Length: 469
Ligand SMILES: Cc1ncc(COP(=O)(O)O)c(C=O)c1O
Image 1 (cartoon, rainbow, N blue to C red):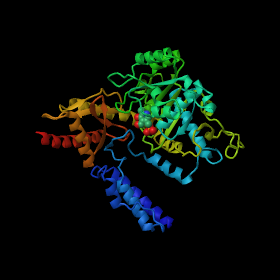
Image 2: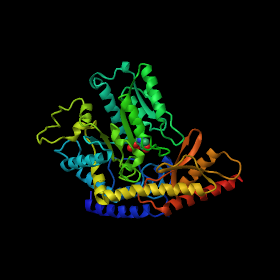
Image 3: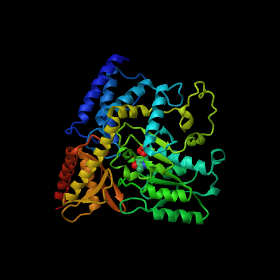
């Protein structure tokens, strides 16, 4: 391969792409079905390979038909935006291509990850804490439940989990589905994850948690794990950690805080109160790839008690990898992965670049933009706020004039907006009510971006409304 040519062309393509993805006149998304994609991109791998020109064309095609998640009108997922220093970190991490298992192979990255975990734990208040970067929030939640199971029933690490213990986990009815998957993987079974009722704001009701724990104990079961969500996927609600911590202490239960979505709020002096009591939890999932806008994947599992992670791993005497020659802790001994990406460096680059205060400002800006967006909903006669806004998600719907089914109308509205390519927003259901979820996760968003979103949405709404009247 002509590497200098490909490199200089790649550099030009990156520049072009970055310019395009911040240009509001370029669609966020050019929707195509898989068949249509196959008509414009040659997906086959042939025997003889391809030329450099064809290779360069592949890059263009890949970028052309991918959703522009760096565009400020990408408001669909709990991650968005483009973080330049972190992007550079991603490139150089791939260039060095080290794996996180040993210091021998990843000396700089090992120190970076250790420092990032230490820094993150200055926010959790885990004075003797530890942690590890994992392959996403779902996996962090899995490691949390795994650690809790191994504390309650340590022999399961060797003998397998014996169902006679009847382990029970407790999460809110708004919690992420990864906890049920975790219970499934760990042999506990997803039916043994109890969903505690949440209030009208989407926050877990502590009294209901205690009642379910007591009922479980009275039925001869073994409660072992409780998860607080900060913030919930749909409504962005923060569960009351402090009150939950009291209950967990009373019954000696592991308390995990799932901050996959809103955990980065811990950086903000102004808004950290929403996570009051975080230092009383046993573990915490923190996903910098969401509110800190680090390219996927960048996710940390933090734990209060040092030694927890090593306790999870059953055989670290594998002398073909861990040699202990340098007398330095190999991070692989704390991870359920062997080969592991370097995800801490891009966070380090970005955090170094923006600084502690810079990142605080970015998180505070997210909250200001969410407040601004919910005020826009509140003051528009045909927009209805469906769940009180607590953090970064604004859940609303459009109220058309004329007789129509509101769920169908709003589903069509979000589809029309998506297909227009001007903005992408997601939807979900609260009970039977369809909710449009406008989620603010791009730290660079400003008032005019929020205005543009509502203009685009209202434009499509009016068109649909005209059809029913
Ligand atoms: C509350 C919550 N927990 C866990 C997850 C899963 O995180 P990840 O996508 O990093 O696996 C999400 C994802 O949106 C989430 O909102």
